[in-house]
Length: 269
Ligand SMILES: C[S@@+](CC[C@H](N)C(=O)[O-])C[C@H]1O[C@@H](n2cnc3c(N)ncnc32)[C@H](O)[C@@H]1O
Image (cartoon, rainbow, N blue to C red; front, side, top):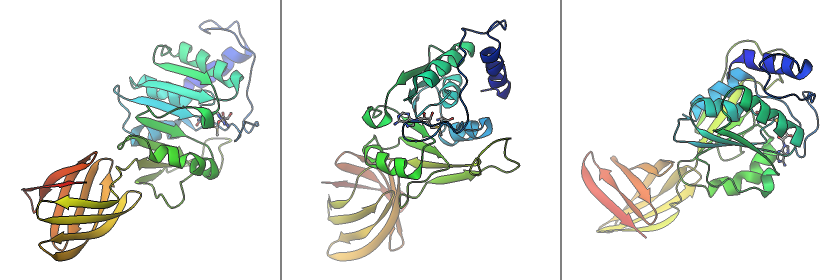
């Protein structure tokens, strides 16, 4: 969203008679004001754009911002054509965000609801954005790990402890006025498919030990066992066993792909 937009919105909020203001409101949130589980601090626009870039948001996405504040991430996603929902506990912020979406002409794509993120079902999202706290990210983590493999999660500033991000971006340059010290960093995770355990091959078996997106384990073919190490990127799997590279796609209880540059393999459980 254009930075100038929020300046205009603030003017709308202060001087409700300003032409072009969609609707009047005299609510004016204060940076750092209390929220149900975390205070309101808006993500600077540069980082909003970076977060949406990192998640590669397109028109086919359904983006949910958990604790959506004044709606800037939801509106930014809708401006990229995505369907987007903001879940926010403070109803005055919800009203402000609805007004902002209207002002930006994206009300059809950007909607908001007053709800507690911990009591909400966000399982249908293809992208989750959030600016909460590490402790809240960790509380949400089990639900997030149960989302569809490939779902992208982007967090302003706060990580998810031992679930290391797939990507971290830190913006260069000076912080915008009034921004917190962690204004410039965003993390991205891709929800990995679940592969932990034993899988059968036509001529042997694989045992995966999964640690979030990282895998170790063994590959046994014709009674010869080799250690393996690899990674998951959503439902895409890649590992090496000895000097052989395996790639594949996980689809429920089947993994199919190629190894050694073109030989097909398939595992089931
Ligand atoms: C740090 S602000 C981030 C706002 C917005 N996502 C952004 O990045 O600009 C966190 C927001 O979460 C909201 N919030 C806190 N606890 C919540 C809860 N349990 N359910 C829904 N919203 C909550 C706060 O009111 C606040 O607007």
